[in-house]
Image (cartoon, rainbow, N blue to C red; front, side, top):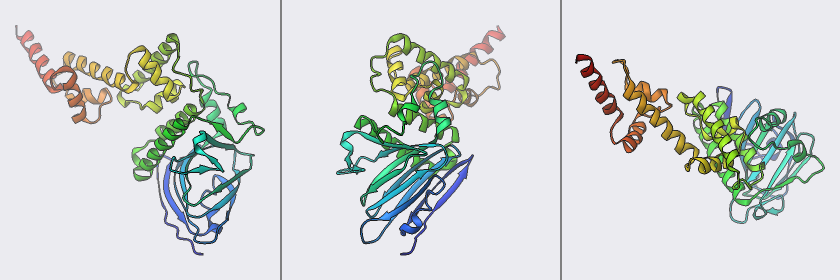
Length: 336
């Protein structure tokens, strides 16, 4: 067999992304050689193929792989890392002999042998994180429930974590969309955002699901810490994943907290809050040289068309009209 290596790789701000396809099991072992020490055994006669899309930093990686023939992989993670594997929900899809209807997430860490048999057409998404970094990030903060990673990853425990099937489905789809975006436009996905998204995924998958009964005091604390962080980076408009990572809660916990306290999703509330602040600044602008663009950027709105549209829906006028109206009133007051 020969190898058809069709790879695309690009690097921006230490974010490496690309894709590769192999047609030879002997050379397949080199595809993820930086992450694993492993070998591939083809189990059926016929053409072998494996397609991998990948992205990563020096302490995290995300990849989706698809197998074209039945094969068995065995080996172990290099270094001191954690691996979380999510099946991509499809008809009759199975994972290591278990139906994904059971809601399982295979996981492993350095030092544990991996044995995985994949049928033709098997697709899954895998997150790999530096173990110490992941442990520190997920244990940080006073609000989020501290996850006992050491216990979860005990080599004596099962290689499967019981996760609600819908959680597995939502996160496998979300991570696939993230990977597609990174591979297509790596320069548009900052390294910090990429890492925050992976940490949020891990926390959301590992955190106990019974968060709908969050007591109001804790919800209030989550909201207040989120607003404090958002204020510190107001001009950058942090993503939900960045908010979750810095407040140390799962996406679900953040959503429940905001719905409990303010009756809106985090993004809805934070966007409206920034619009209201922009309105106040436009009304109070004293310097004749101040432009709508300046105030929009200061509040994290980089797409001026969308900013103007949202602004008009709330305040009934364009931001330029607000600025012009109050500038005229101030000039008139000075003349009088």
